Length: 411
Image (cartoon, rainbow, N blue to C red; front, top):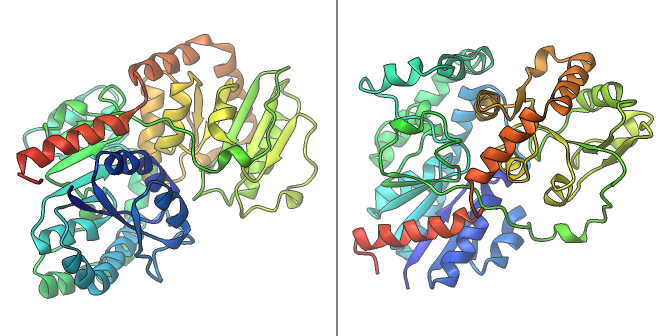
């Protein structure tokens, strides 16, 4: 039996895709110690892993992720400082055989380097291409990829963060000197690659898949029922087509958007299921249209099986689940990686990506009607979903980890 430490950021979209893998590793005899925030203690312990609290004052499950990407990078680097300052003694005492860390978890990478053990990166969204002089021209000249890499929303997220560069590099220099790690760069915070990189996407869905080397293992998604969701009472309507709307668990404090949905779809001839999250006061949104079902939370996998169109923020897990059930999408990205997901969905014909800054009720309505009226979108979604095969990426990931252990003589 080997001991593995798993480091993750305290976010639903980064935690829940890893839990089937953790349970499978435990089933195969691994001792898994999982570092996260207390909000995820119960689901982590249900996998029979050992939970360790690693939340910091600036990075926990209540942290609001800013759209300023340099600010996010600085926040992640601050999380790394907290982890290095507070966790290294217990990590050394634990004496792990190897480490798994999220792709947005630089402290996992740094801890592995400092204590000298092999590391694996767990990437719950698209892998960012390792753009080098050798493959740069190939990446950007692929049809449609220029827009994907240099779209205005993504560029704006970086340009708007220039004021955060001074404190970022001051902290970078501090960590470099104190812990003798390579001086962290801004882009490093989002590309924490390791000796092996597990990506929960297929090569068909991953942009620029041809430029990744064999250290990247595209294992595909894991579509499994989330623990605790069965207790939620929800009856899926059966008389009319269903439009399902959800902005996920991080960027869902969007009362104006929800009111726009009321305006757009109040008389569309579909049942609209709207999930608004725990922050939004449903009563404050105004009168609920008669064809709407509005709740804080709905069991997403159950709803998607009855859905004709999914309007989403573009989180990788939500999109993968929709594709698995052959549901076309409207993606309204809220953060950087979601722009890439939305644009990829549009490239592959499974839906449309809309820019939220210029979105109107009329545009939302017309786009929904276009997708509902054209079966090509649903057919493209079905093709992508079929490419997943059995959606048991966690099994393939566990197999890859076993192969990794043999290569590195980990018993």
